[in-house]
Image 1 (cartoon, rainbow, N blue to C red):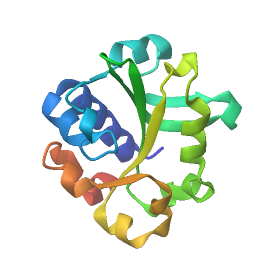
Image 2: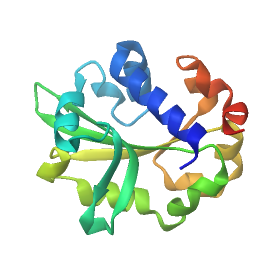
Image 3: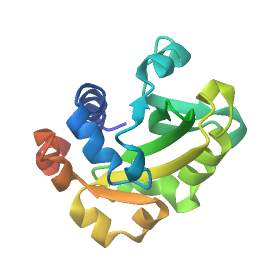
Length: 168
């Protein structure tokens, strides 16, 4: 994995966990937008399930051929116990989109749904974080349910405003 991309993933996960404002903004860009005021990020539960590994990173499903979701964020609406997941992939260049050619992100999200080891989430969406130019110029990005440009994330996380420099 590219070191710059890995650092951006770490920064993104930290900001999502720490900032209610950022979490609200991010959720409002997904199909779960109407739930953001009620949704709680299951960070502690994910950490318990992940053990030593970071709570959000590289969740794998044996049944889906050992494919990993780069970042997994599971939320719960406490009033209804509805759990939903955001399978997030961040890429700096098109070279990192190879797995999307096979549509494996949605396949993995589907395979992990309603399983106790993945906290029994009942719905999901796949999300790509990438530079705007890549989102516009690479048809493989259409294999994600949502595509969020780095440039819009940079309003909350300034490091996403310099993807070319981060890639160097």
